[in-house]
Image 1 (spheres, rainbow, N blue to C red):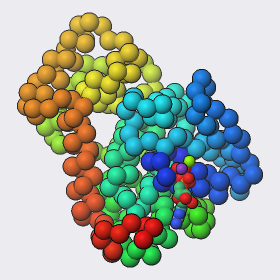
Image 2: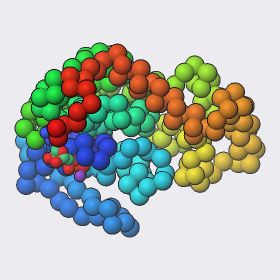
Image 3: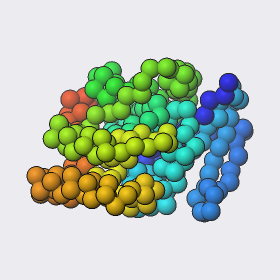
Length: 270
Ligand code: GDP
Ligand code: K
Ligand code: MG
């Protein structure tokens, strides 16, 4: 049976380079429905039952840019079997912010730490094993441009797609924020595949698109608002700001425990 893989990640993390390396000449270029954002789909050249989609680059899954909306709608509605988050391993901190959000959609997630050739050149050290443990998410180090470890990446992605174990999300939030999210979660009844928790987090952020899609009753909307108001009072910030801070703090903490820069202050082009 075929497997569908979505390549997600920040702009310039190497998604298209990876996509080209995996699909070779088995690729199709079009547009996402209704928008002028390029859509690339293809088949893994070594096993054409594996379909791969190259998503637009995003830093977040908020509803503010076309790229974010296209990526998020695809993941929520088409539900690929597994997401490969292509991470620029020379800039893990920024890239893991998106990973925390991707893990909340209820689809197995694998992190591809790309640009490992540059990491080696820079003499950075990354404890990928430890990141794997801390995030509860498989990590595969690759270099898309040098074709390094790509078969292994697909093996791991297929393994995760076929795994019957419960999908574990990255727990990015403190117990204080967790409490508010679960309160919202407990109010929700959803009949779709979309995880309640994703909806609860997005409601907490007052995400305009979820507010529209969830179409809550007035009573429910009031209850959710009351929860958010209590949180906003406790944290002296709005819901969206609270969630953003929590994600950044979480990622900063992980990176401080696992990544050492060899040539501090220099970028990959130096
Ligand atoms: P996208 O925006 O995520 O699709 O990223 P691209 O695939 O366009 O890659 C952005 C830039 O990074 C390009 O110049 C690629 O050649 C380069 N790149 C991608 N993967 C690697 C890699 O593994 N190593 C190195 N050194 N460069 C890479
Ligand atoms: K690019
Ligand atoms: Mg691209």
